[in-house]
Length: 384
Image (cartoon, rainbow, N blue to C red; front, side, top):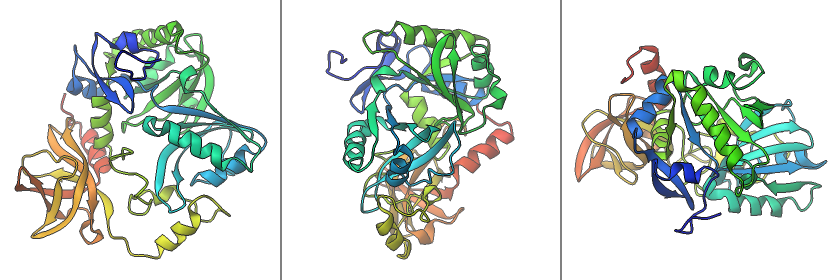
């Protein structure tokens, strides 16, 4: 289904329209922020209590068949043979040159079934690539995205909110694991995952066609009602971006792409080069022996100013890299933060650099954004 601008829509499109400032993202009409709240309030709801996002625009592929495990071991960067049933695993799809085609979540049901969650902008590309790579495997790949609305319930009060709607004890659901259960009487997959730097859950609702969205709306409203006592807010893409940036989480298309390899992106922890074979392995082995020309880092401004994508990064008179993502850190009191790539010689934490903002150098330093966020939260200094 599409709207009048020929953008794809989610099951909750009609609910969002009128309540939210809508924007185009990866071909979808999505809420940027809700008029009643705005990005800052939505951001702080997640950091301090709980917020819910419609993330149905993400792609969901069901991989089934007797060769499922072998196939996924070949096309992803992670080892599939040590997964237990109900495990979620962050991984990469790589091209033959070792470039990052996408970063994904693999949800492992059993050796003949898994569910992949991929980025919205890569949905068609990933699906066609997986089909091409599956020719020698006995597997079936189904794009079930339009039948499975997906929500991200995030924040310190997310468990208390969701616990009202499920019969299972969510204390037993550990980070990067999932269960199949009913949420407010709707069949769902609930995983303890997210993209905000907070505890939280991602909920995939099954068998809900786009042209029959009543069940999706019912579940969405039930979650909002369950979170009322915790001041839950619906949150848009604006808050999703500020939250993930504060946590140092890369955004595909900005911070990583097919011209980025896992070593320079600092994602090599999600590679298993000991595997017998996987797409891109041979090139990655060669790349590992070559000194890096750049590396991804977090940036925190010391002078006033907001780093934006493509702003140059200098060390003295030497240009050493550029910003790939940037904005205001709401949690840190509206401090400018960013992410970018610099020459490895200048990637050490604490290194002072200058960001060129409006043709003027502004002082900043290299930081671990996730560590900075955790220290701030531990100190109880959140901007409330």
